[in-house]
Image (cartoon, rainbow over all chains, first blue to last red; front, side, top):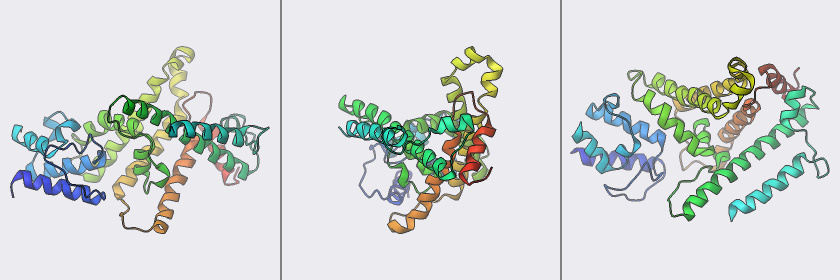
Length: 79
Length: 235
């Protein structure tokens, strides 16, 4: 499974756990729009650390950088 | 429109609860704690509950009036206070009670600690980051918000007088931290009845904690603890 699909699946799962079954596109804002919240961002941080070895200590953390599938893919590419 | 209706309802609630000529004539919580002359325990409970509800209503109106203005101006601002009394956990209550303040603390204190420290210990990591935000950040924010106390009382008295709120933030931080470590999220399919117990526990925790939600510099911790004991007919 490629990164984009894995991230999409993870985010879909996160939204489904919150009872949000509405579809979302790769560019849709999830955190800043309020569909996901701070606690969900933590799960996202852990997902990125465990699956891609991404370390936020090396990169300034900003919610807007993990706001959508596109942002997350770009973040991993930049790293 | 809702804010306006709620504002009128809150004004009526305040008068009905605390004004002698209107109805219940409950003693003001702040006055009770300051004087230390407590009425019967059930009157203390009534006073605490009324003050807690009034504070929540006032915050809801204030925050959501600003959100409404932002929305009228075309911004897609998220809600501030949203059904806190239905929160199934302490962490969720805080998230729903004062969303923007929580987000401020999360951005400036929680994430920096969470992304840097205790990475090998997931629970310690969460707890430390929560304490950084809900305790340290919260305390720092309120101390500097009321910086005029430093000029009025001098730095030492301003810091020493802050002890009641410091205790409040410490208990709040530990409560949220423990709540998050348990990671309880009530499933959507759970019945309304099964939600009553956790919701009551959460509201009870915040209601009792409200006794210590005092940012002034006149009271001692003992005065607040005495009131807490009086609620259970102790002391």
